[in-house]
Length: 130
Length: 97
Image (cartoon, rainbow over all chains, first blue to last red; front, side, top):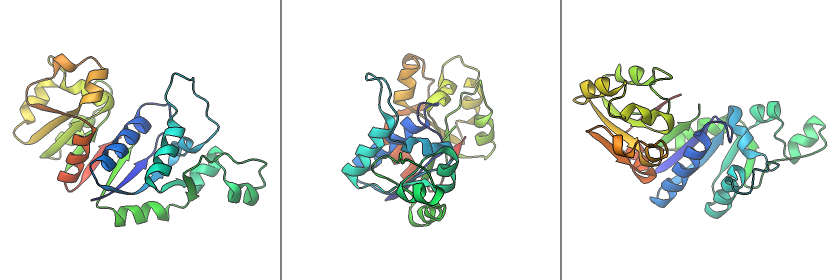
């Protein structure tokens, strides 16, 4: 079965990003496919590679990056939500005249159409947020 | 429909909203699991609805909140794999955020 996951909450806020991560791992462990993980609203903060949590704490961003590269997950960050919150890739840096990028590996910035497509293509979509 | 509730019944009325839909499955996650504590404020509501709804709770969140030995009767405690199975089993799901 094809799953899509929507994450509307940032890391280290409540628990949504953690629950979504464990859910995503379990989806793959059950032999299902994840069509896409879409990060929206404050959820885009899961995609900054500049986070530095204490060493004995989980690194939520790295965890997503590793899952994406290990399982070829398509992790999409909403462009409008990213611009508001300062989540930047090369394209956005040039387009908006910024001097840095911070998008973590495994993520890509795109539009809301990607969420709509995930809703159409996936058999199930599950929302995680606060 | 599978209703996913991640808010404590002491905080938000998500359980009441879900129960108003009439029937289906209700999965408690995160702070939502406080609803399934024996002697809790939501116990009577859940008991009254057990004919129409099936109730589930996520084991990691039950354990993290010290409720392992306080789970009401009639609640199925599931792990993350069970969470996935429930989403697959029910044709639609709703997260009450």
